[in-house]
Length: 559
View 1 (cartoon, rainbow, N blue to C red):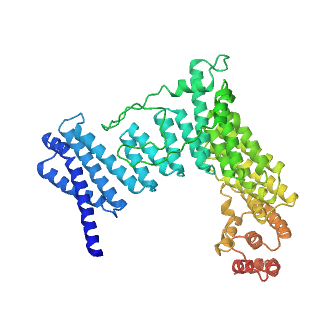
View 2: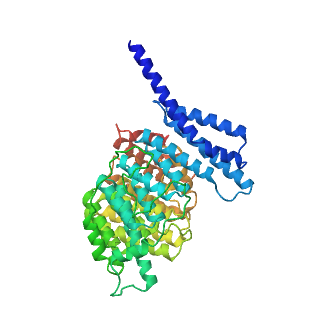
View 3: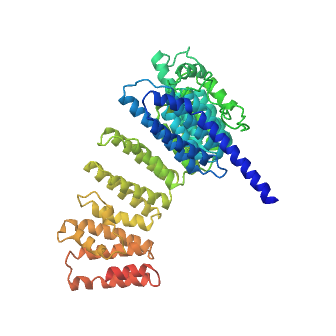
């Protein structure tokens, strides 16, 4: 009896599925007849297309339909759309007809069913959005974003992409701001969202400044407030005239609404009913009266809110600082962000290096070294000095010396600048040694900088071969050579290594470097008597490292 009931249920389900498939197939008849009448497809091609569509319809109507079934069906329709476009161009048909709009509606219909079946698939939603953007179906995109954000409120890429579309494609700054505020209410701990909101406010402020400059309102007492200027600069851009797929109706409102449903979509998806952030709205309306500082007041407020929400996130503040360098409107708040970074993370070596690298990174677009690069380098060195003066530490000194070494290896650096940077590195090493905060790597770089000062090559890292490599001694012997021009630099490098050996007697890499320098002093072809002078230093180092893994490196270097 149970098997009989199950068979009846299966038969009814199959009949219902067949009815739905038949209904969908019958709706295709007018467009297929029009395609054949216009000569875009032959009768045999239409029959083959109908058979493939019917097979895919049965696949996607199955209870266990997969995502790949929908994607293959979509690929069939997209290929058919491209085929009709090519044949229409070949036949000289410049205007699109009903079949083109019908195919586009069918693709959206398949995407809609797939999104209903796989609501949590973010990649599927993104594919649908990509297709709608390529077809410039703006009204359709508004509904897609509303549906997607209603079912995936914690998808940061969806929120940022929807806000960017509202701001860039539709010139609707108010809608973009509302979307970012809603996104932050649902994902308050998202660094990417805070950075996107901060960058949006900076770009918006820059556009307001440009419009004021064009209207001659800079600094004027009669300048409009922020909301009025925003309305004048953003709301006058009409929606891009994209391709209408034939079923978008109704007027375009003031931005997409999360939770809007398509007429062929399932209901009941609750939207995000959120109140506007009154604090930000008040800052926008009351503090954007005029001037660059006023127009960036909202961005400053967003930064303060982001820091309050994520006080320990260093990358968030550094990201905001980089965004200020990309937009002219960020100049008034750049100093405040740097001050907050130094106050909160003054002992962080990563923050100090990031602050020093920012001026040079902004000049990366210019390949040739110029006055802008020189000014950026001076600003970077001043930033390093400020960080060392505020909170000196062994880790910070090590990071500063390594950063100077990295700068000397930049392509296109003038020779005079290379010499100055090496002198700066030597000064940092001496200061670290005098303060008792020099690490073994600082002593190694100190010795390498002494020896590099006598060479024409700019690569200092080549003077620091791996202590575990047998070829290290050969490299240093070749650097020493038989010429006595480098004897003074070699002696200074040895002095730096010996000073480091006194402070760090258990460091194997520093000990190996000292032995390599002693070997380099013997020339490229040392004699047995020269090597005899190395036995006492070697035994001294080997006894200091007895029982440690570093002793193996010393023995390998000796061999």
